[in-house]
Length: 127
Length: 127
DNA sequence: GCTTGACCTTCCAGTTTCTGGAAGCCCTAT
DNA sequence: ATAGGGCTTCCAGAAACTGGAAGGTCAAGC
Image 1 (tube, each protein chain N blue to C red):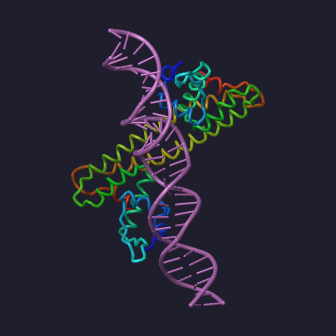
Image 2 (image 1 turned 30 degrees about the vertical axis):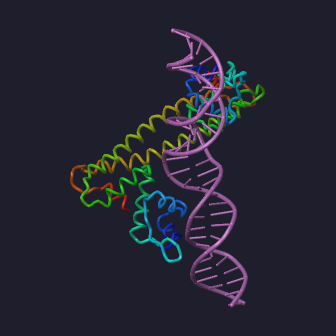
Image 3 (image 1 turned 90 degrees about the vertical axis):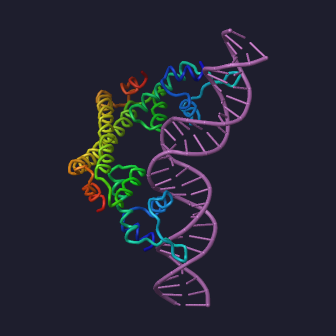
């Protein structure tokens, strides 16, 4: 199938699919006219990447997951490790954002937010 | 003071300070030898930016905040709006990450993670 | 006076993950 | 034959730095 069909099937923009080919995540065949020709397996790979990216895995993680995916002798421990690392990352990020949220929420609450120049938010940022 | 001193005073890497000058967040004077010469006011601006960035404001937000900061006739409402927008962004991001976290945590839990190839994480990503 | 080493300068490239746009070929329908 | 939509490549930009190379400057020590 053409890139447009692959895009429709995976929900990925055609531009993104070309980019994924460029970095070697997928290697579609080429027709005589130069058009990419995506097999069902190619589309499955793209869908896999789309879902993994949606879970926040980096492109490099996706590359590793793809290689585990196609490795019939893989150990599930390897996959689990990648997922667990990603989970830790997410937890770290959530904690960080919650810290920021608390500080910022406090500042927003204490700022009267009217036409006067007096502002606790700027005061805080002034150090 | 030299860039190294400004870096030490603000906690920002010298590279980052040069970058901030390049994009116009600060305009240090120059000495005869070409070295940047940071005034106390320059250092205060850099510190302001460092703290705002630490709260997750974008560089463009910082530019706007700096201009409000130096505007003695500003309305605190303008500052509050920027901070409130940022707060919403943070909330959105936290919700998104918590969704990912739930999915991923479930997958990690259900994967036995041993030497066998069978793996619910890859199954899920396969669609 | 000269060397050494730390510190400063500019400029270019790379990071990450795409996204937009331009110039131009291909295919199908009218 | 022409119009349109889809396809191709290549270049540039976004965000916010970061690393490195090549080279100028300064203060201290011998």
